[in-house]
Image (cartoon, rainbow, N blue to C red; front, side, top):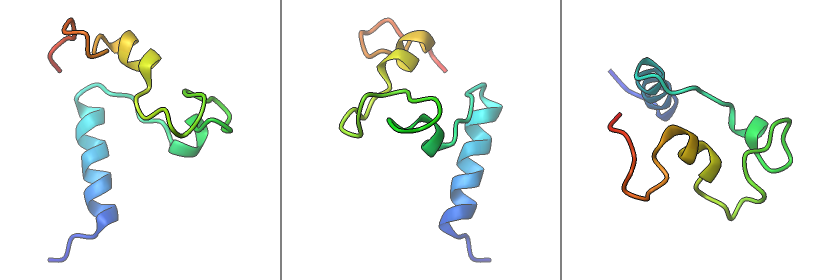
Length: 64
């Protein structure tokens, strides 16, 4: 059985969704998308999302 990159991506997305994470399509949350989550493509971490989830990297995050 051959597993493609898309197969692996879909499986990973399913795992995260099963763990309670919400899926957002990349172009929708891009800086020029319908619901931007960052100012530009240089901003790798979605800080507001991380803060809301309690995983802002300040040592106070929840285990997920």
